[in-house]
Image (cartoon, rainbow, N blue to C red; front, side):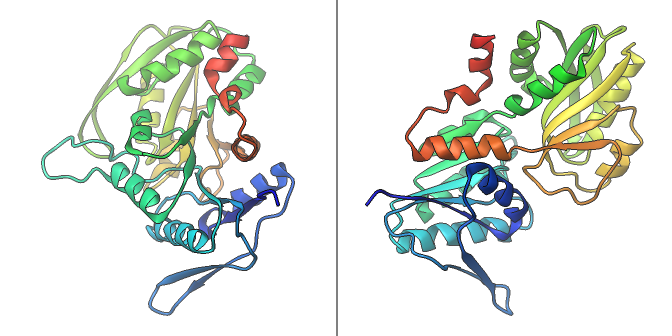
Length: 316
């Protein structure tokens, strides 16, 4: 009997998993996530998964229960004799802790990779890691999807003249350069310096944005401080308009206030994380179709190269 593909969701990502399952063409599998009075979590699969490809959809955002829940689901699937266990993390939490940038700190993204592997995951599908080299922390295959497949069609529909792309920091330059190349557009860099996390000490624009419609692109919008400040700086330097596209809407602290009070035309995000509330300036694009295709290709042992921006550049 051929192994079946079965999709299950953790409690934190049901809203997205249901859309992925709909795009895939089958309902989510039945799983019970029991919580005891002391807070312990016990997942139970309510159908046989013996010999099947099991895709477990769960973003590992705060609280840490989401990570623990996913690890326990992986362990339960392994003990239930699943043939392959694929962890689908639309948002990979702790990715910003990717190196030892000061003494005596943890490398959280490496620890999460170790935990997923130790629990029994055979493969990971995720999107827009804060640092692409995190893929190297795994000794199992990682399919690293690119939100450019979502953002490029949206930007094309905007039909903006004098288009310029902006990287919110030097580390994002390579990724922004690829997108700018796709549109044959210019790019600039907003070089920022931090004294502490979530607090910008200074920022300067490297490049000319006079009379340009600027699109800022980043992987994470946390407090919104960087985007708000960058947008204001770009407008002060002569930009006609500024909008931002960010994959993961963490939106913590004063993020909604910062975005609503900024000069941004709009903030476009993906639904890798659930929004805490609505805002007239925030628009959501779904990644469900992209993940459904990646899941199907992983199950059918097909390439996912066509989902990446370099493939679009090559075929343009």
